[in-house]
Length: 528
Image (tube, rainbow, N blue to C red; front, side):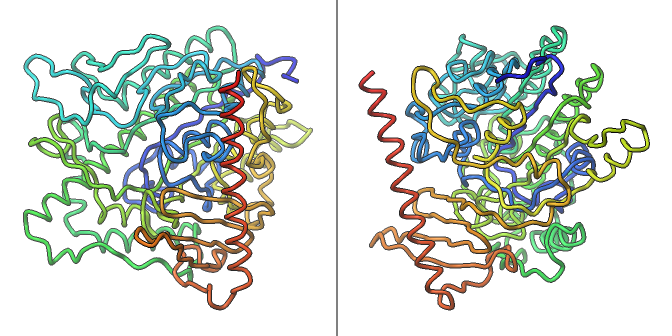
């Protein structure tokens, strides 16, 4: 049942970054300046083993539905409607909230058909930050991939392509739209759920001129010193154990690069860092807006990334990196730094692909646990919830059952005239509110991963990762004890053959079940 007085319920803001590496925030070890998110972490909690799907659109489907992307139909393509798609929008709408979606969707179902009251944003994947549409007068030709496939929607009115006025920058605009939509709810004294899905810092590497030189000189030293400093800071922050092994670096020897190559690499990371800082600043604008209207302490805030830093290579246009007429990507060497201390990157089932920073700041009502609401007790409760580091293994599919528990609602048996299936995840609400559980790494339910030719399972202390050979299609597996070896540096599959086979069997059974759930739901829909 929905709460009797939803107007008193805390708001919820769920913020998703795009292609942000695990160590790309200051509070996760980075040299990149992210004071807003760092303050959220200092006043809340950081998860060290929170994971996604390693790819943008499957993560977004899993995050919104609480299902594995395989059950929804989003494990291979974003170009088909979702099934088994009760969403976070439905959960909060059923609890009396106004439901708002701003930013990147990357699906074909309109969010307003998925439980959201409003949707303003980029309907598909990445787009030019300055101008995703046609060239404007007195402007360099915007670098584009496929402009007609990059529509923007404002509720039901969509533009393909979308050619905004000059001065547009997507990260800033998404924030403006979020402020405008939440303002309406605040004025109506209506609790709101805002899903704010930024494209930053995904390519194209674009940054307004005023921020272009923000990191000038910072990366002139190359990959190795930056990565080493991150490792030291990650350990000093207590995010991983001081003696924990880290993955081998895979970037090129900086001294082997030509002057031109080094200048190119420096420019890519400088712009990426500036985009991340700009993202942080825009999140700060939103939080300032909430504080101005006395809503910040009445808002649950969650922040994460859709996958690890990306090693994908895209280069379009002849302009300077960072400007409107050049579509450049970060590429693999700096992605290896961004995913410190893990190996591999976006699209991989290894840690570098699936690990995300996950920051949670609780509303005041969830922090104050004492029945005696004296200022002294409130301060004690607040102190216990500051700067927490949570080591519990979790996954994006856990967000929906967590929010269901947060609004104290039952799981509906039907949505949009279709039967639902049980959530695939588990509620993390007790992890949010009980700091005594922060060191617990024991999860009794497995977490599965599969994207393209890689798949994995985390169960207990074990993590199994499989890679399928493109030629003979045979799977090769590695096994890790990720309690002692969080960065998956030592394959122990030969030492534990029984556990290896058990985990492979679990993966096979999971894939069969989730794809069967998709097939059954798709057939039901076709017969309606």
